[in-house]
Image (cartoon, rainbow, N blue to C red; front, side, top):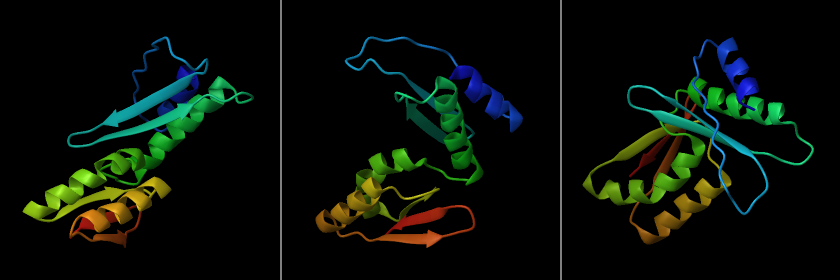
Length: 137
């Protein structure tokens, strides 16, 4: 996984530092978590291993997802956005809240719908060239 992810990131001129950590868990599977950090943004990608899929393919898929997030100029990756929706709704009370995401997951759609039921907020989606701007009003 590590070598496949590193190889793909290097092809796109991204330096990487990936360390392997082994932990005890209830699941016998494997996984990889990658993240990229810039001045004001941290974007991530996580893939879990599956029976029948090589570890190299898992590493490549994780790296491709991370590259997609980076190339979209997102300020949040799609899974971080899922988790921050309630906080954006709460923060709306002190002004407008917004972010850029690459794509809206089904979980995020449901979470935005739910927050609109609990709070006096509206989630506005503006499709831009490579991403979607979410504005909480």
